[in-house]
Image 1: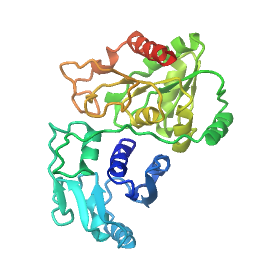
Image 2 (image 1 turned 30 degrees about the horizontal axis):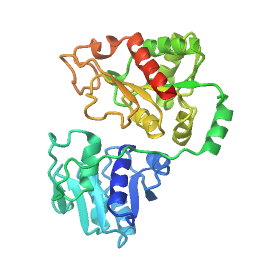
Image 3 (image 1 turned 180 degrees about the vertical axis):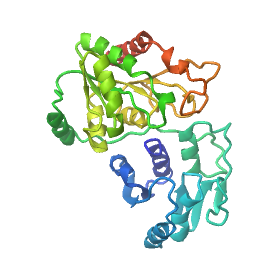
Image 4 (image 1 turned 180 degrees about the horizontal axis):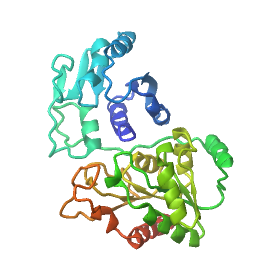
Length: 326
């Protein structure tokens, strides 16, 4: 969802008068609300994988006669139904599941020319006859609300005057994207010795791994997993001097609020979803078995993550911090 802002930026660059509304799951609304390119958010109350034909029909019909074009990012049949029921004249999408008829502006995805996910998104907003390929990519930039940040920091006991480091040890994808919690804990102790406060960010699902990091850090890190709303995370991450993170949604939020990041990659290649930032370092061992694209290690060893040492990540972070200080 963060990467899609690059598409919105491209649409506004093509025509500043373009009005952009986004139909998306309710959970994504706090992120979309921080994108100045977005006018309205149409919340789609459907669970993952749910067809919800009648719901999609009702939503689509409520949107009739409002739009000239829809850009459909998922490649599933059901994702194209709302624009179809809305009667939008131009319904643009990549070829995916059998959806001829519901999509009438079908594009063929050249995975070699547009390997990065963000390039694929932006490509859907461009004219296929445009000779400029791949399209220009502008990095996402989420708005930060300082007043809301102050309130959230006060509620959580965060001293904004003390430099801090953000750790994001979770990854919704699965364990093959998660650098060991023990390593995050050791990293926290190294930063603590340098005078940094260390905070762990994540959803309620990450509370357990966040506590593992706290225990491994000799309790110098503070676990905020599940204690913040997504909106608060956007604001609070802007406080961090640096974020060390797995390849995850929070990684993209950290870069989108302008924070330097060190990103650990395991089963997925950084070529697909790299941090969209000029102040990022990628730690990826590129083993013979990588990338496997599996949620769990097919061999059971997770060497792509376990063999990536704490000191290596720490040195990358120090270099980024030194560069930021100029």
